[in-house]
Length: 267
Ligand SMILES: [Zn+2]
Ligand SMILES: [Zn+2]
Image (cartoon, rainbow, N blue to C red; front, top):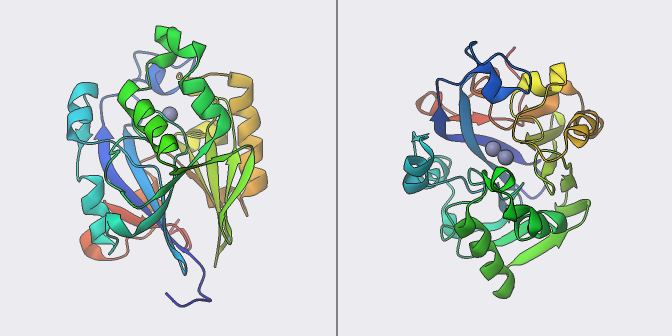
């Protein structure tokens, strides 16, 4: 990349969960109806100043514990786009759910970016409630606490800047301190929604994923995503298999694994 080129964004699929019912994806969904599988991604933003990773995914041991399937480990996906974990200088953690905040030791040189209220939520009284702590893992949360003590965490409160043209924005609802990432690219502002919208259907139909802290904030978040993105076509949901169909792979060898999000959609 040259110093003046706009960032490149890569969605890297590392895991998959099949056989989901509509009720597992949408509040009010029919448990008898099959629904979309979920793909699990991390996102890499290559800038002139270095690579920013969005979320760290989970490893094979966590996949086994949670009955998910790792297709290609996160580090393999990064290698496929020419990124060594040691070269990652910043990691945005959109929220501390197990599928976004594992692989604790994979990025030894990175600074981690987190919303204040996500850490407060994941270490506070709500975690006394079994239903609210389901998507969290104590090891992920304590690993982040250790990074705080190692001076490796930058906290954000609402909007924050990671690098020129790369910003984070608090969108509560799914988890109390979830943040999305906005990237100014050659095709306009792309918004990595993460779990502010698991599937395209969530923000398009204003439906709510069943793991939720505040449903009102979730639907308000859909409006915020639209405000932040250049258009609805610039919003990238966090778990939708369609992302790999709608955006081109960087090469034929990476088809079905990695997609470029800073270039025009194919549909
Ligand atoms: Zn989540
Ligand atoms: Zn998730």
